[in-house]
Amino acid sequence: MPALLALDLGTTSAKAALIDLEGRTLATADAEHPSRHTPDGGSEQEPATWVRAARTAVGRVLPHTAGIAALCLTGQMQDLVLEGERGAIRPAVLYSDLRAAAEAEEIRAALAADGQDWDGLTGNLQDASSCAAMFRRLSRTETAATAATRGITFGPAGHLAHALGAGLRCDLTTAAATGLLDARTRDWSRDVAHAAGIDLALLPRLTSQLGEIVGRTDGDARDLLGLPAGIPIVLAPGDAAAAALGITGPAPGQDHASLGTSGWIAAIRPAQQHTSIDGASHRLALAGGAELHISALLAAGAAAAWARSAYLAGADAESADRLLENREHERGRGPSGLLVLPSLGGERFPVRDERLRGAVLGIDTSTTPADLYAGTLEGIAFALSHALDCADAGRVLPVVGGGAASAPWRRILADVTGRPVAGTDGTDATLLGAAIAGAEALGLDHRLIPLAAQGGQITEPDPSAGAAFAALRPRHRRLYDAAAELAA
Image 1 (cartoon, helix red, strand yellow):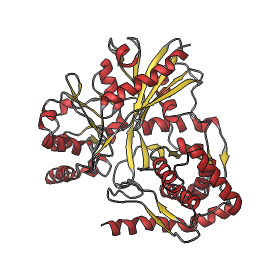
Image 2: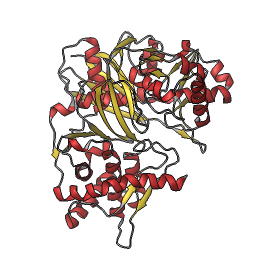
Image 3: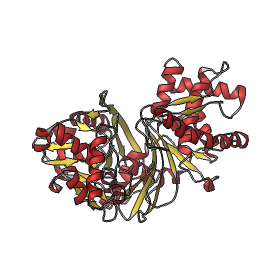
Image 4: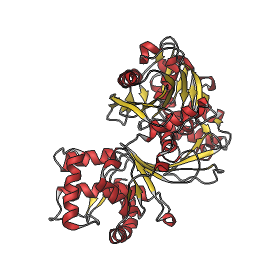
């Protein structure tokens, strides 16, 4: 039976999975790729390293199948890739790059002069991370590169599809994260593109389905990925939407949490008129008239990894969990006594503030390294909880990502949110979502089921611990404002 080859080109690695039409994962693999960070807030990656990492990951899973039904692509969103005659002209500017603050204000002012509100037009608060602002900055600092640009893609999935001969394509969810999509028409905004100095002809064609066949692998596919020519290429939604598809399916409703390198609370909702803007959350278009509401932390698993390095002498996640288990056995479940902001380098939620840095409040002579680590995990859980409706207490919250493997962290998340937390079997939700999008795009008869519908281990909140955390929750939220005021 041919399998779907799902490929997620993420921030730190390329992940590949072979998933058959019965929903069984036959093989998985990943391969890391590097980033380059600069003192002025720059964050870039070489697109060639995306392709090399993808080839490595794909090569590790291919021996486990006799045939590929489709290559299903997803990946990080909101990256700016300038495509030339022979691939990318320069390194991709990542979504976390903060160098275009001045250009973002220039675009805002140019639109305002014409009676346009950039935030209202796009349905989201726009800032230095907008791809429109990134391009305007490059047109000023790297004139030769922008002059040589023959097209633009907005992430590694679009770049790889282009390299494989599918042309310039972009899914709606990724497009909605760029600052260039009109939320009302769900098409590229001519006015924003003009203010950013972007020729509309450079922008990719938008897909209209959750998963769309955008082409077939060409003669370069064997060199690029080790794949034969002729395989359908399905462009799935960007990683956040693909994860939602893999966790809860396409129907609007259930919230879910992710504890990956970054973290988020997200849910698919019916599309609404963008009459008001929540500056700290995103409303991203989905094909079919829905939206993905997402409240994203810049650091979740990344903050936990930093805490293990800083407080626990570099202990791995399993060793850190054992420390938390021992601590819980001695003290029971409940707050550590610390309030922690896990913002290591700017933040997106519950506040949007590129200057915000982390904070730890409440240290005394009894504070231990395990307390500091527990407090960090609590801080991440608190930050996510600010996106949840208290009226939904008692409704199961599915959780995915690397941090979801930690039983102590799942208990902390349950206690902080007051909601039962559903763990998963370790299936990568983003890869599963990409495979679901591929199976639907090809019209295949399949049994790929979202994780929330598969059941899973439920971690119930502890009533006493939950009450204690509930009392601290508003204080934790006020700490963001206090830290921002001090930073200012």
